[in-house]
Structure formats: C-alpha cells, structure tokens
Image (cartoon, rainbow, N blue to C red; front, top):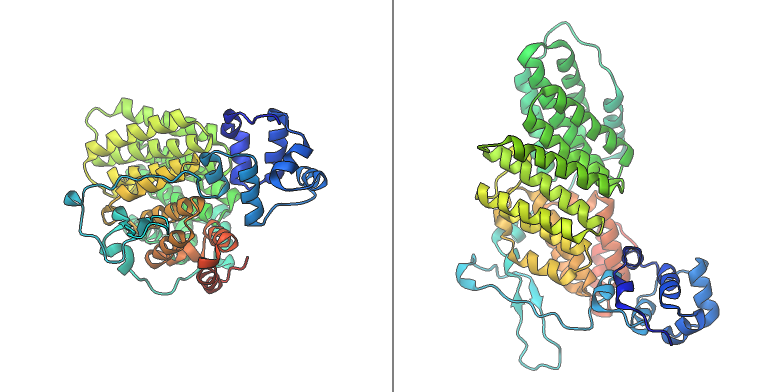
Length: 466
C-alpha cells in the first residue's frame, strides 16, 4: 500500500480540510498526493469502496465522532493532523509547570490542565495557573441583553443615512462622552447596550463633521473614527460582513479626515480585522504591517498611546498571517509586538487597545490554535495572568480560545469548564456570537459519554441543539 508522506498533512489545503472536518476532501487529497485508491482507503478505514466514493463525491458526509477517529487511525495521521481534526493526540503532551514562587495565589477553582491516565494510582492533578485569580470565576454579571435584529437594522440605517444639520452647532463634549461610553460598553461585552446607543451617536457625529470648522471639525472626525470602529467590531462579532466592511471603511475615512497619525493607525486595526473576516488574509497582513512600519518610522519618542496602537497592529498582522498559514511571518510579528509590550511595561488600555505583555500572550494562544497546535496554545494560555488584562472582552476571548484548544485536544470536560468561566465574565460573548454558539454545538456533538449530559444541559440553557 502506498505510504502517505508527512508533508501531505502540512499542506494548507489539507489543514483546511481537517479543520473543517471535510473527510471527503481529506480522502481526495490522500488519493491525489499519496496515490491511495478508494479500495485502499476503504480497507484502512473500515469502509466499503462505494462508501469512500460517495464521501469523496460529497454525496455522503462523515459526522460521527467514532468514524472520524477511525479515519484518523487508519490513515495514520500524526498528532498535529489529529488535533486539527478535533481529536486528541496519540502522543501524550508534557507541559512544564511554571514555578509557583513568582505566580499569584491560585484560585481554589483553578482549571486542571493535565490529568494522568487512569492506570496511574497516584494521580497528580496540575493546576491551570495562568487562569487563576478571583476575577476569573467571581465576576458574575446579570442576564445578557442580546443585540436584537431590530437593533442591527437601526445600526444599518444609521450607517447609510445623511442627517440634515440643525440650527445649533453640536457640542463635542457630550459626543466625546458618548463615544467613550460606547467603547467601554463594548469592552465590557455589553453588546446590546452598544447596538442601542450607536445609531443616534453616528448621526450626531456626522452632523458635527459637516457643520463644525477648524480644530473642532478635526476632533469630530476623530470621534467619528472611534464610533465607526466600535460599530465595525460589533458587526464582525455578528458576522455581518457587508455592514462590518462599510463601518470599517467609514472609520478609516474619518481617521484620515482627522489628520491624526495616531487615529489613522488605530483605524487601520479595524480595516485589517474586516479584511481577515472576509478571508483576505494576505491583504490584511500587508495592511497591518505597512501601518505598523509607518508608525515605527515616524515615532522617535513613542508615547504609551503610540506603542499600544503600534503593538496592536502587529498583533492583527500576526493573526492574519496565521490564518494564511504563514507561520514565519506570524511568529516574527508576535515577537515584534512582544518587544513593544516590554517597552510599554504594563497591560493598559491606551487608545482602547488593551495592549500589553499579557495581550501579546493571548494572541500567541490564538495563533498557535489557528496553526493547529492546540498543545502549544494551552501552554501559552497557562502563562497569562488573566487578572492583568484590563477588559472583559479580552479575558473572554482568551478563555474561548483556550476552550477551543481543549476541545481540539479532546479534553471536553476542560473545554466546557473554561467556556462556563467565559460566560461568567462576559455572558453576551456566549449568547450573542454565532461563532461561540457553534463552539458549543461542536462540544455537544463530540462530547464523550462522561461529559455528554453536562454538555447537553449547558447547550440547552443557551438554546443550542446538536
């Protein structure tokens, strides 16, 4: 029987098929590049030639977890490929535990990261040190107010409306406070509140940009860039690509009209995010890298605002490079961002970026996960001091990335545990986002018997069914 080369499992098209659990494409690639016939594929995976043919043609889908595992075993997938497919690795991962001496006190509800096999009588449970701290599990918020379809429709109307100026000149002070309130609500994951306040705010800002003059107009454009930035962020979470792109483009236009290099750099972050969301990863890498290089060349004595925007652009570029399967560029940009984080010296929220050393670690988690290395993602997550992260949105994103890593690693109980912690911190990050609800559905579909009942109850509490 032909041997499958290790390089096949590292091809971008194979990784995409594995992450999408597209077994038909996996079979097609194995046949194309390893020379395995449908009969041979069937013999190693326990299927008939006719079934393999139907799967390869798309007439049948493989959804059963046990069949997926049988395919992985039969084709001899290496651990990286197995984890990309959502299965546990065959080789146990050994994770070094940092010294407790220089860590904060561990919460009594800290997540167990590694559990030895059942045959070992003296089980040693290691704590998920990086996710310790009271802020992780005690920050219980009230019931989530979801962003309703009507709210999104109102926001859509505000994005394309052209309100007529009134008789009085707008007052920038309350508009600045309103923009700050929208940003704060977004970072606190109160998305319903943000969607309700944005339509009238955007209309008022557009009036201000039309009727004000001089420095007041420049300030109005800067505030408008920030408001459109948060609008695009909300729409990206809602997976409304068209409106998200429109809002991101409006943010960039307003930033340029403000004549502020710092605001231009800040708005480059959201256009990069919109490009990534649309699948334009190469353009996203180029946009983020170019904007960061421009800032770096122009800054001789950078302020905390400058360093935060510069570092955040590098992080956006790193994520985009990872989605393009460009590991070298992703690591290079992450390392440059880490240097900016060291220069900043703390995790702050300058220019609403939440940038700092721990935020860089959060992005290392995301990049490792995107590149198919769940074990490395968990290892980076363990190093994050979640209490040092300044905003709930970043904490919840870290936890959800960690839950995805555990699910990819086959640790369903830990994935569920960390997902619940994310919901405690930011309920709407769970209940409003389609991507998170899909994660819950994946957990429900693949949960083993030991976790299935708890996973089903959790999914039902969110209105999610398999």
